[in-house]
Amino acid sequence: MSRILQITLVVLALFFFLSAGGQEEKVTLEMGSWRTDDTEKMNEVIALFEAEYPEISVSFEPTNPPDYNASLRLRLESGTGPDIFYARSYATGVQLYEDGFMLALNDWDVLDQTYADGAQGPWTSGDGSVFAMPFLAVSHGVYYNQDIFEELNLSIPTTWDEFISVAQTIKDAGYIPVANALADQWDITEVVFMNIAPNFIGGQEGREAYDNSERTFNDEYVVSLFEAIDSLQPFLPNGYEAIGYNDSKALFQLGDAAMMFDGSWTIKEHEDAIDAFKWGIFAPPSPTDEQYITFHPDNGIAINPATDHPQEAKLFLEWLAGDAGSKAVADQLPGFFPMKSNPPVLNNAYSNEFLGLNKGRGLDVRWTWPSMMEGNPSGYQLIQEASVAVLTDRATPTEAANSFQDGLALWYAPAQ
Image 1 (tube, rainbow, N blue to C red):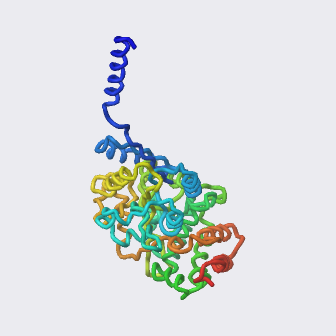
Image 2 (spheres, one colour):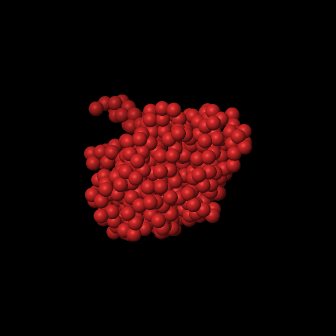
Image 3 (cartoon, rainbow, N blue to C red):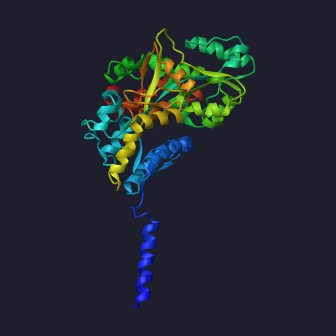
């Protein structure tokens, strides 16, 4: 080899080394989620982390919500799963952990330093292992058009009878009373049925009475709950069987519908879309003087045991749990409430309005999540099918309650 060629090779090698900054390649973490609507805002949160830790890049890659569970499992089973990912609470998350797809976090000091046992519970397996970092909770309620209420001289209803009376007045005035519909069946299940259920069954104490075999799943309380679902029929949009969740939101945002059962996760969408009228939130109406709010542990964040970068993944989670990260999430994602013991101050007025509904009311999670999700048919599936059947006149409320009881009895011990 000539002297000139040797020098040339040395110079080229030095050039490539200097071009790379003399550093190792940046670590990239893929983050899985079902929150497609949060992509822009989560990227803003991530940018704050990357500014502090430039050696780590996080790519937020959400999946269409209804497809998330199946898609995530398929990827994990094929060895192509994300490094970190949103973890469903209770049974759905437990199953993934027990199948070996979530890293146990028991020896991670950040958990006990940041989250109370109650916050960790929805992501704790039967053997006591915590399989995800608690991340965000959501609340449920009823969005309403304040201008329409003022125009019609309506007060916020607190009882179910008052709610139906208000809905009738709104309908008589030519507005759609309730925007919710059936094309996306999870809407009627999660944001209507699960929204009002604690008021009809007696909150956490009532829910636990079913799980302790003290009540049957077709008793008078469950029948009354399906009767309430049935009573909504005259007040839903025309052709509601074919109207999807996003269309329902549009009906409310355009001022065509006066009310919509929904969750705190929709705050930002309404803020961005509504400028023609005033709007607010009220607590779901109750058939009795006792009122409850569904305040649900929505998602934790799990680490894929197969990741090549477990320490970087823990560093990102630790940042999210810290003051800077939790504040950024609360500000960028109003309506998602950090579950840490010392949560950040919320700047968003609607987030604080949702939290204000908790005062003086009992709190509970979505009914079927803690113990009725893992069997076949699941409690969720049974409620969804029964609710749709009632709203399409294919079942009476009593028949719907009986189908709930009979379906659970196939596998769920408290129903047998």
